[in-house]
Each structure stands twice: as structure tokens, then as C-alpha cells.
Length: 308
Image (cartoon, rainbow, N blue to C red; front, side, top):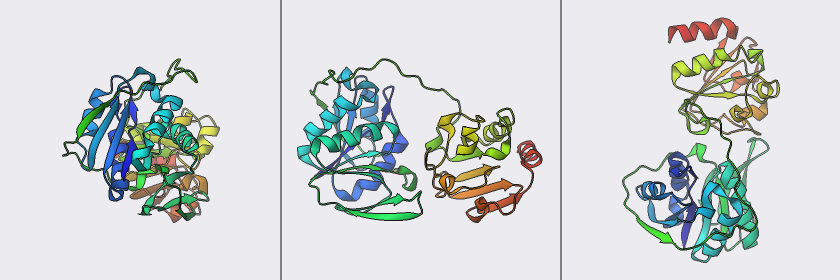
């Protein structure tokens, strides 16, 4: 049996990093077919076909699948499920909306946030804010799951899979798209950035958070924040890193004024190198940091930014 991988597509563009990392995760399970859904996704389908390990791309060219509409896409996948043993997607917000619906239509469980695949029936996923790894063995005939991509390397380009058009039409009686409201930024996307600079409650105010943004811009990094900083209004919700925010695993993670509560660590502890700046030498963040600087951030960050 083959694997069906739902591609993450935004405005007709393939989220290459997320799809390529999911492809690496499931490559050992068999032939991988990538599903690109939505009118205008021709370029996304063509790009998916170049990823190493993809044996076929299925392009559902119907406007009803645009904007990652969960109900029609879930119905589309459920209708295709007979040919597949595993149905997977990167653990994006869109996939977390779609895949549970797919599982419900197929009357199987959904296995979320998979971090390792032991064999075709056995998977690992984090629980208790990442403090334990749960091994799940599923006896379902169809395995429906999302993959936490942060721990996998991206599959390289170099393939030449065939692109096959699907004639499936979307059912639009359950829901309809009205509008997308998306914040735009010149900085890298948080979950795929190679460098992330995050600020916490210690930054003190929304105005002072510009110190974090300035350092991030010097490094060409994405900006993150702890839940405490977000709850205090220092940073927007979509910057939140942690158990209830986004999970990141960049090459470099700089934590500024972040104490290191377990909920935050769950979202960034897999980073390759962690640098912590905090004036409290007993802060838990230093227990996971590769480099720690005990200093007042209002002295250290401007100096660091200036030297860069």
C-alpha cells in the first residue's frame, strides 16, 4: 500500500519545508503520493513533483478546495482512502483542522504530532508538554496522522514524479470561504526559520520588545515570544512559542528574558543550539541552554545588536 501526503498550500504556493520534512518522516512506509488541492495550485503540484521520494502528485483542480477548506478536502481524502494504508500531513494549523475530520469519516483514530515512525503500525508522539514520549500502536486499517516536522530534515529536490489531475469536485454545502486575514511580515516564518529570537516577560513592555525585533533583524531571524509575553500584550499571538503556541527547532534559538517554564520548553527544546540571556542565574532556561549569559537584557541585547 502507498502513503497519501496532504500538501500544505497557501495562496497557490507549496509550503516546501513542511512537505519535504513530512516526506522524510514517512519515506520508509512505501510509495508516497502527494495531494495538492485547490484551483491555481499548478506551480505547487509541479514543485511537489520535484521532491525526492514522491512517486506521484495528485492535483485536485477545483476552486472548492481552495483556502484549505476542511470539509470538502476531508471528503476528498476519504473518497481516495481505499488506495492508501497511511494518510499523513504536516502538523500545520490547516492539517489539524482537516485530518481529524478525515479520521472521523473513516471511523479511525487520528494520531497527532508524530515525532518518529517505528514501523507501519507504531509511532511515537510527545505527551505531558514533551516530558514523555508515548509509543502508539494502531490496529486501524488506515492510519491517519499529523507529523511534527521540526525534528526531521527536509527531503531534497531532484525527483521527477508524474502529476495526475483529479476530476473530483468539492461539495460546498457545509461551509464556504468568506475571507482570510493574514499578518504579513518580511521576516522568516516562525516554524521554518533557521534562527529564532524570542522575548519573555522580562522584556517588560511592548515598546521594549523592539529590542528583540532589532536583534532578530540583525540575524535575519524570526521573532518569537513566551506565553507570558503574549498574555501581557508585549507580542502578538502568532509569535507564541510553546505547548499552546508554535513548536520550533531552528539551528539557533536565542531566549531573552525568558525564565524557561515547562510549557515554553516544550516548544523549543529541540533547537540545535540554545542561547539564553537572563539576569536570574537560577532560571530554568539555563538547564537546557548550550550557552547562557547572566546579564541584564537591557544592557546585553543592545550591545550584542551593536556588535553584530
